[in-house]
Length: 287
Length: 77
Image (cartoon, rainbow over all chains, first blue to last red; front, side, top):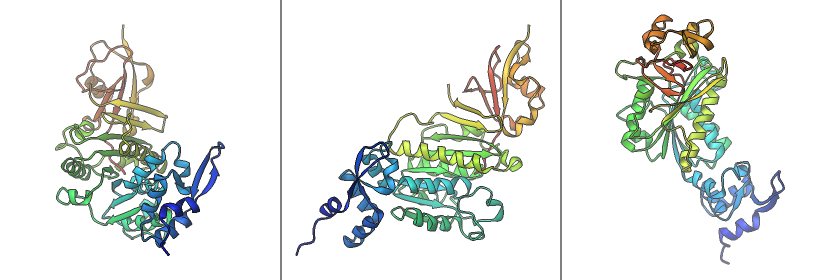
């Protein structure tokens, strides 16, 4: 007997449910996604995409909809994002991108967790100390959203290996902690012709912007790069968890808008804030 | 007749905030560089300068009512 087409199975095994506002949708549970992936020898990501193409919403993404349309959710599952640095910014960025359903993540960090990371880094805990950050993040994300295909790169990005590390990513997110490392990332992004979301934090203040390959880039923030110091005010002020996580949220929001081709990003502008006195400002980087 | 500006200093520069930073008196003809010098802010820390939410350089002449922000280099993650 011929096996039924996966489309028929998706129709049969999805159920009608209601959103909190009463509107109806067809829902697919993660258990069924897993069964269909096994039965039809397809990736979880592919099964979710097939469902979305039929306007059937995997239940794990239902709170993304309707801010994201099913088509946009489908597109995010096709996207690849390179998260460079998997510490304070990068850990939370990787988690959020996995939860929203970005299909492929490349997590890059040559470092291991240490005690001073525990105040803010999403995947630093008493069991992960001394372990490689990228690897630990990959394992944690597998438990959060197994449909996301995560590549853990336990090395530092340099000017030499940058393009290979970025691979087929559509966008890179700067979650680094030094200017030389950011410059290497910028060089790699320019060679690969992809945009870069860049953020930095010090104490209770931070900044975030978006660069495209043809833009002025980091020089707009740090001036003459050959004369600039490797690190900044964070060496004195440290990094507080709510400032770091807030910037991580902003980085994800910008990345998702860029991936979906939405307008109104921070390109050409810098969002800065200081939570000490609740100052928020968006500065135009060029007149 | 002095001009007044609103002065915002971020992160490590907060320790240089003068009294009445929200109504900071300057002489007409004062530049950003003059303010940085008068407040003893280290040159290397006055990296990002913006006036009325637009990035400017330190030679910019300040006008009455301007909102001047100075941000040090930050790099944490």
